Length: 410
Image (spheres, one colour):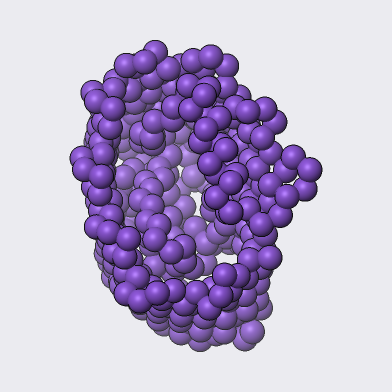
């Protein structure tokens, strides 16, 4: 998990995600057998995760308050802005089992970050995992209708951005999977829009039409090997950055090697073709590779860790294209009852082309100490250090961040 964004405080859970635009898709198998879907749904609804039941709808409400101390809230190399912020947030999860197999689910976390000394840095916050999804099972088919949305600091997704950039992303789409026993075929379409809530970056507002497909062969009950492909078109609201088309194709492998160890690998060819209609310096079309690998190790009930590394290609903000090599590590240790600590470290080395040309290294550790005070109240304290070294002098900075957080389950 990249530093500079609130550390997730969920006891005993580690998730490794690779989020890219059009060159890599998730390789997670979902069983399409209706009876298994019904059983899984019933387990989720009866494990006391939801705390409110209204008619057929199961709800979980959480209230959250964070207090942030930041010695460089504006990511500045020459005039760091020391500030304190209050971070109230309301989290909602809802599950409506329309039938035994078909479910309408909502995940929503929304709040506000209010900086005391520099109100210009204050902004809306919508958790990155917010979205609405409707799963429809029909025999061997699964149809998924969804709308994912978020408003987060984009610096956490693109280290080439050396400023606070809040972008509202909305992604409605549809996907369909066909389970042929030893082979699962998946295809999907998304309409992805970005709208900058920071005035200096409105030139980066865009919309993309994204397509993806995947064929996964079940090598064993706990592993799959397959081929995935994706592509799309991106169009900007302003003629500053170039419109582009892209596609990618490559194999993937995912397996649960032991009851405690799982991992996945993605690799392939990616291509970006630019229309050269923008006012920034022209960029050459890109043809190259993407790759990523991750492992999750659940040693026992008290200790778990994850590691991911790879090379990702994505459209830039201050430039046309970003090529980024990354390594992320995270470990969680519950050393005594109701108390846990999480350590994480991230490293990125990247280059940009078109517009602002930059080579950078960004790295830093973070640590969190959490305490389950009661069944309903979780408290935590975290510290994160972030260093960026860039060959563009005013893009380098150092940041220290402390966060005190309280989460209450209603």
